[in-house]
Length: 223
Ligand code: HEC
Ligand code: HEC
Image 1: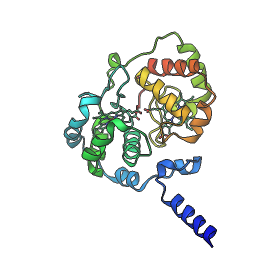
Image 2 (image 1 turned 60 degrees about the horizontal axis):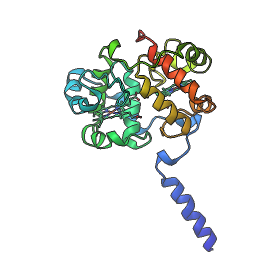
Image 3 (image 1 turned 90 degrees about the vertical axis):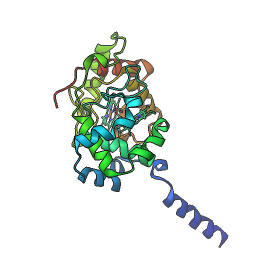
Image 4 (image 1 turned 180 degrees about the vertical axis):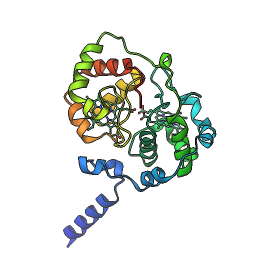
């Protein structure tokens, strides 16, 4: 009897584990959270978005270009759907992002705010000379790997795919890209697409650096 009780308790606690702690599979990755479904249905207003984005500027800067050091990613020109997925994942804790925690609670609690910000930020221009580039020594090696393992999702020019929530990785800061590749490979990002984790896992340090060098060197793609 005691054993049965323990297993019932164990099953019940698995069921209430936050999504972040559950292993994702290719199937679950594509399931939209209720919140993401809601924000995707909410029509964003870029003018309201400009005002709602003010609290974010301390880190992501007023033009949403982030920092070339890679401490903060460029958001300008990113697909609205990607921004929304990442915001809701950060909010739910699925994606690890401790630096942003208090801001998402205070400023992104309403779906309208997220929709407005995504509408505003996704339409901002990508300022090329503010993109933090890599050393430039491994661009060719990175291109070879990217064309083998990444283009099927991120596109030939790193443009991503708005429909499928695949981020634009071209013209993103080198150090941010490299950090994310480590997080993805080592399982620290939280929300990584499992099919991507499979291709990134076997990479050595030099491969990750080459990939980041290549992606940061790509010009802003036409959407
Ligand atoms: C205190 C600094 C800080 C503030 C303020 C902040 N962010 Fe962030 N944000 C970050 C950091 C750091 C990351 C990248 C985390 C990582 O390294 O994975 C990030 C990532 C993001 C991403 C994911 C980008 C991508 O390419 O995946 C989005 C979207 C985002 N922030 C939106 C916002 C919005 C909207 C606000 C305002 C409500 C905001 N942030 C305020 C620090 C901040
Ligand atoms: C099966 C599709 C798929 C493949 C293959 C794939 N990715 Fe991704 N990638 C994604 C998705 C989806 C995300 C957004 C994170 C998430 O929500 O899972 C992402 C995120 C990223 C990010 C973070 C971008 C940001 O703005 O935070 C980087 C960097 C990245 N991928 C690089 C790569 C590289 C390099 C390869 C090849 C070695 C690759 N990806 C292969 C789907 C893919």
